[in-house]
Image 1 (cartoon, rainbow, N blue to C red):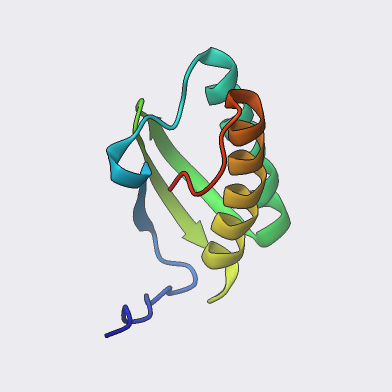
Image 2 (cartoon, rainbow, N blue to C red; image 1 turned 45 degrees about the vertical axis):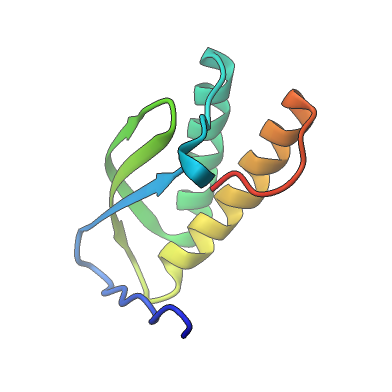
Length: 99
């Protein structure tokens, strides 16, 4: 059975978290955190998502965000995922999913 679609309500604060696949580490050093935040900021600006707070842990991320439209969060997370996972995989010589 497929996962039910998430409901994103524009203008309402959402509490999100991303966890590493199989709870694996998503950040290896300080430069990884900086790259993630750079890509998060760019994705949020491009897709109309306000970021209110974040917490970056070694194997997961918490985000408190408000989307401007129904597609904004999905697009932001897709953009962020593509860029950061590519960066992380290239840096650590790995392939496959991270989240």
